[in-house]
Amino acid sequence: MSKYVVYDCDMGLDDAWGLLLLLRSNICPKVEVLAVTCNFGNTSVDFVASNVFRMLKAMDSLHIPVYLGSSEPILPSLREDIGYYGKDGFGDIYEKIDTSALVQPIHAANAMYSIAKKHPKEVTFVCVGPLTNLAICLLLYPDFVDIVNNFAIMGGNYTVDVNSYTGNSADWNFFSDPEAAHIVLNRARSKILILPSEACNSENFTIDVDWRLNGPLKSVNTEVLDILNEAETAVLMKHNEVNWAPADAILVATFLYPSEMILKQKDYHGNVELKGDRTRGQMILDRIPSDRPENVKCIKLVNRDFFKNLVLAAANNTLS
Ligand SMILES: [Ca+2]
Image (tube, rainbow, N blue to C red):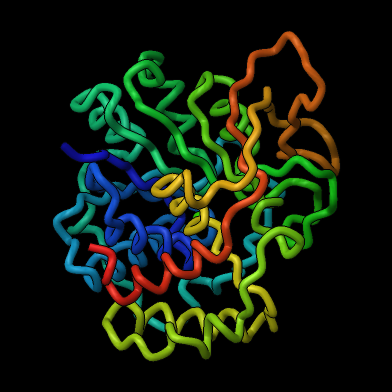
């Protein structure tokens, strides 16, 4: 018996760590990644697919089918491509892989439904980019929500501070496609585990960049760590980061090891603001009781030390 997962991503470097954790976890039942679906976000969807194949090849996992999905948000966006991870999402170091003959011939949103239909109530959709693919699937197939197990989502935020990457108060993933986030929160019923950006900010989660770049991960010489070490060194040093918080990988860790990882979590009714000049894409939680049903399990605090050990073990492939 396996725990089935579809990984819906916009493959930057924190998505890459998340995929590594999924493929190398040792939980029981074992995790089986049935598909990787690609959404625009950190970079264009074709670069996302290129990065996915680079990671799958490095981990001898090219048997996992990859599907191309959305190349743009549902509505035209004011979003500028900030390219935190570089133009290509992986630090602008590697040649782009031509994935045209490698990707599956159907759209990610259709693939999501087909996979859920094949394994009713057994598949968790782990979503770590803008939610366009998932929103389209929910709209196209009204019974989709009934046949999934759960959704685990990295995105959203509940405090109204201006985010330096978006210029408004929303986190990057929800800001990149607010309509998609709104559709997902309103249609996924009570099936969402969500890791908002607050749980990954420097007040709540700190791993020194020096540990990341010059600590024990540096001496792991495998194909996949060579990629992550080289690309992440370029990106983190370019931004003069002092803190390493790979949000997508943190979400994956909470999905895989909830009792060890999640220190504080609360259920809320959550929705997404669509109209504000400076709050478009902001997640709104009903923090006082309301008649609206609780639809998000919101993670507030995670176990940094467990995460560090997990990353190290996964990098050394000593979990299984
Ligand atoms: Ca991502």
